[in-house]
Image (tube, rainbow, N blue to C red; front, side):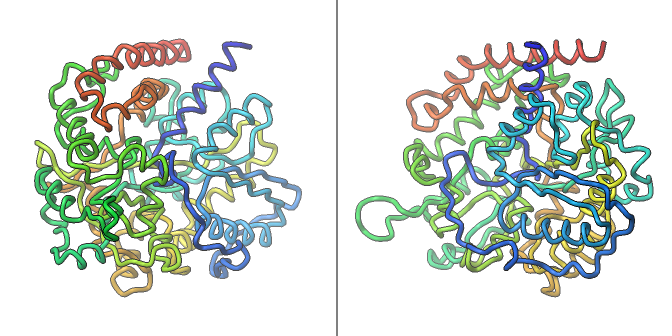
Length: 486
C-alpha cells in the first residue's frame, strides 16, 4: 500500500508544473490575481448553436475535472451544456486552479474514485497507464477524427507500454500550446521606443538595454513601480537555457548535467542578473507581494509570457486595458529564439461506467470542427487556443484573425513560428516530457533558486549544490520506469 501511494504522488506531481495548456496558466505561485472580469458563467455564456452532438446517453452521469481560468470555464461550460441538451447525459463539471489540480487529483486517486474525464499531460501518460488509471481510446475514437491533428499532439498521447509516441492513444488533446512572449505597446509608446521586430529577436544585451529603458519610478516616490519584464522561473527559465545551447539532462535523460555545463550556468546567471544585477524585473520580495502576472495585468510590466490560452483574457479590456503584441523571446548563443511548447489531454478513467459518452464529449472538446471554432474564438470572439485541427489552424483560423473576426494581439505568426519551427524560432517539449517523473526538476525549483535571483548565491554555486539531489530523483524515476516495464 505504501508503494502504491508513493506511485500516486509521483504520477500526479508530474502535472504540477506542466505547460500545457498547455496546459495551465501564466500565473506564478506568488501571484495574487484579482478577478477583474467579475462575470458569472451565465453572463459570459457563448453561442454554441452550430455545434451538433449526436447520441443518446441519458443513462450517463459523468464527472469532468479540469483546471481553467474564468474565461475558459465559461466557454467549456457552454459546450458541455450543449452536449447534455443533445444527448441527455448529466455532467458534473468541476473546475479548479492549475496550482490546486495536482493535490486534488491525489485525493481522487487515493480515494479510488476517479473522475470520468480529467486532464493528463504527455509527461504523465506512461505513469498513469502503468498505474491503471487511463482507458485506451482506440475502440472509442475513430482514426478519421485524429488524422488532421498536429502530429506532435497526436503522437504525444500514444503509449505501447514501453515507449511514448507509439501504440494505443490514451488522450485527446485539449490543445497544442506555446509560451510566446508578449509586450505592452502602451509602455513602448510612452517611452518613445520602437516595438520589437518579430523577424529580428533581441540578443540578450539588446533585451537588457530595452528593459532598462522600460524600468521606471513613475510616481517619483523613489521606488520602481514599472519594470522591463517579469518572469516566473518555472515557465520562463527554459527559454534562456535552450537558446544558449544547453539542457538540464544528457541526451538519453539519465544524467543531470547543469553543474558541468558552462552554457547552462551562463544562461541561468543571465536570467538571475535581470533581477539581481540589472533590476529590470521585480525583486524576489516584490514578486512575493504581487506576482508578475498581476503586475502585467496592471500595466506595470513591459514584457511577459503569453500562453495561447491567455489571449482571450488579454483581449478583454476589463481584464487588460492595454494594447499589446507578440514577439520573440531574446536569443542566446544559438541565435534561435526558443520556448516551451506543451499540451494537456482529455483522459478517460479506466473505471468509467460510460466510456462511449465520455468519448463523445472529449471528441466534442478536442477534434470536432465546430467545437474548435468555439474554443479558438471564431464563433465567440475569445480565443482560448490554437485549433487542434491543423488545416483549420493554418487556414480559416488565421484568416479570421486577419479580418478581425477573432480579436488577437499583433503578430500571431510568432505563435505559429514556435509551433512549426523556423530558422529564427523553435518550440520544444521540455525534458520533463521525456522522463518518468519530473521530481528531478522539482528539486531544482524547490531547492532555493531564489538565492540566485537575489544575488546571495551564484548560478554556478547553486547548480553544484542542487545537482546531486536532482540526480538522485532522476535515478529514482528511471528505476520506477524500469520496474513498471517489467
